[in-house]
Amino acid sequence: MEAPLHERVAADLRARILSGALAVGAAVPSEAELCTRWRGSRGPVRQALATLRAEGLISGGRGKRPTVQRRELAPPFDSFVSFSRWAAMLGLPPGQHTVEIARRKATAELAAHLDIEPGEPVVQLLRQRLLGGEPVMVERTTFVRSWGSLLFDHDPDDGSIYEHLIGQGLQVGVARHSIDAVPADAHDRDLLGVAIGDPLLREVRIAYTKAGDAFEFSDDRYRPDRVTFTIDNAPEGRPLFGRTWHATVRPRPERSI
Figure 1 (tube, one colour):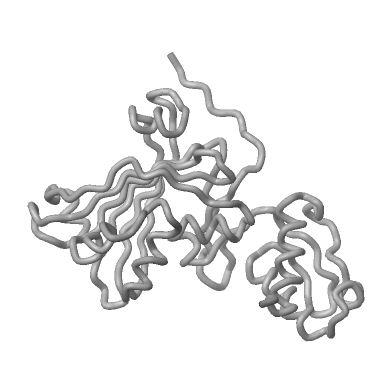
Figure 2 (cartoon, one colour):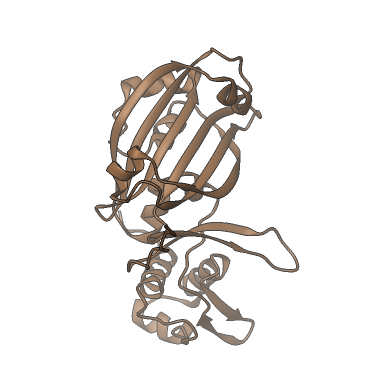
């Protein structure tokens, strides 16, 4: 089934912006031009442009011709939590390789994060995440037993774990993210192709259900030459927090000896 016109127009313009075909500062095709190209009315075209403005990719409106504001796609909450959804927004095939899934007893630190008792059973995953076939992140995730136990009947390399859990009744509420830098360890070296001690961007996340119960603690480590984090803020409104994918490899910082 073909997607609605406004979604197709937005997807086409988004792809052109992210690829650089429409450079930052360049004028976006006018409503009239888009109507002619897509053989549609102004309603869907305006809806598509409004979507791109909400994503922060274009500016303009109210009589001003829209222009490209940036080439960074700051994803909304669900796509920031879900690596697979973020990849889909970029138009890149996501991939994953599960190194381990196991039941363990919660350490005191994990128990504090998940608001459970130390020693309670939890389910832990170690996964390599890929974008377009290239490894960009190592995911160390711990789920409380009630939700993690559902993963033993699911292939974690077959699509999004979040989508699977939501299909099993999980109602995702809010997530708290902390960003810092950590040195790569042996797992990171083997799964990301970096050297031990190389700096990695780390996102530590605690996710909660709509009822306010913590269900996931995750330590995600990214190659900083491929992914960065951005925060957009304005005098009014909440800051917009997102990941940015770099289509070309950025120089890695040299380590001092």
